[in-house]
Image 1 (cartoon, one colour):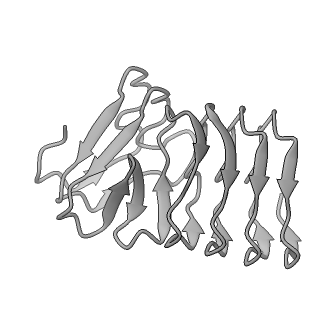
Image 2: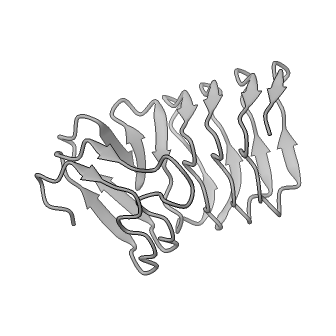
Length: 166
């Protein structure tokens, strides 16, 4: 539980907290550092199942333990400890950089048709991910999106896909 009044959760704040399962984000939080893979605020939190965001927070929200922006149009962070398939809300239009990074229990992913952007390294190091269906609106796959997804056997690409980055 983070006390109200704290405004930022910085780089590697909970790094390596391998037994952390749940965390509560108060309304005062204005920035959570999840902008890259290794120095994320929750790097190495492999048991993290749920992140709860106070309903009064003006920047972030949560549903089913997943962090979104306030309007639930952008996935910010999917906790690494979650197991199985993912169903995201149809309000989502973007998956943020490194949002699913290191989710080793993630097995399949059907991205909603509303999504037109997938950030850098979004699914990097999801070693159990076997199946991904990409939405028709997606025209670019950013760099490192599926890097180190060693079990990935099936990816359904959209017809409008024009660019696959590094």
